[in-house]
Length: 191
Image 1 (tube, rainbow, N blue to C red):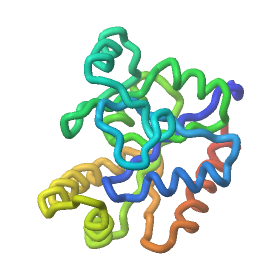
Image 2: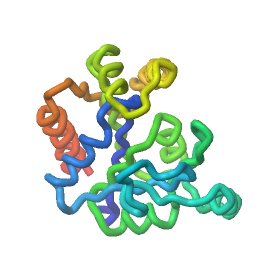
Image 3: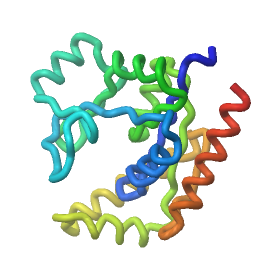
């Protein structure tokens, strides 16, 4: 039924530019919205509760897992991340597109949960570019960068399981956004 929105999963390796691309899509598509993930990690400087993430204690998160409140959840780097079932339902009822910035595992779990979704993997143009982007982060140690690059290689091996792959080239954000919008326009016409 057309009254239900479409969940658009956008995955990329760490440093792949997901956040920037989703922000730009939301600026251009005022009816669309973003799925806010729940996490137990501490807010980074500048992050706002309810906008960047829903921040919550481990204890509360674990209670919500037991209650079945999460469509999907993962534990990564010592913190839990999850998608709230009630919130996702509410967003799907009220917006044509909901952008979800989730990793490869999150995508599989959302698809299993039976939500209609379109999955797009942002492929970085090269490992060098990814390394440079990661190195720009505050507190990026060599071990942090190597760990993220190893994980990126594993995630990129999963890229073919996505509906679409879009290469996100350094300095060509507008092109990547235009390509994503073209995919969304096509999807809307066939639904």
